[in-house]
Length: 189
Image 1 (cartoon, helix red, strand yellow):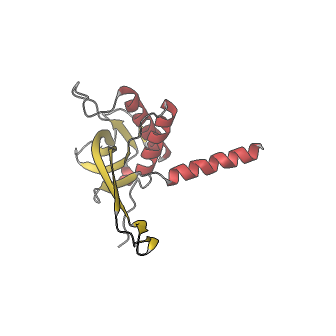
Image 2 (tube, helix red, strand yellow):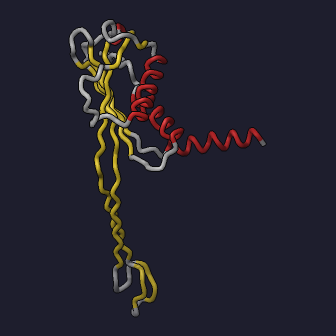
Image 3 (cartoon, one colour):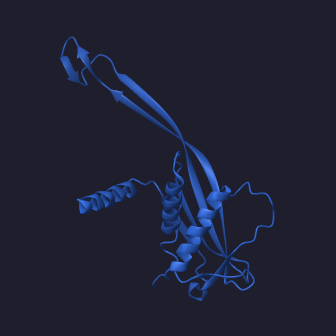
């Protein structure tokens, strides 16, 4: 019985992840040598204006997920003065609108009886749905040159009413998906 529950839980997680609308992308400077990137530090905040950052709890979640993923890739957190790259992120939220219109031509026509496409009237139903898409952008800047060498982004529909545990899981999945192809592999020529 216990094995059945574990299998059902695993299948449920797979089904949920398959339904995700998460979109990731990354870009990088092909001249940068990512083999030399062994350490990183977070960019120090120079202003008290936090309007472009997430709230404090979400900030902790994002930083923790990035720290965990970079650690798995062998890149260690260190002091800003000695780091190979400086890391920063920003977020944005865009409102989107989805409009769906459905036409049906089913009904009763006195000459043909009840048939598809033969009715004398058309029924139209339109639904409008407004939703928000959140985007998280992660930058890596070469500390010595100050040049941006890598940028990754992840975007997904924002869903309300998540528990703190669900929020942590969503952030961990998003950061892992964004960093899956880091460091970039040089293209074969």
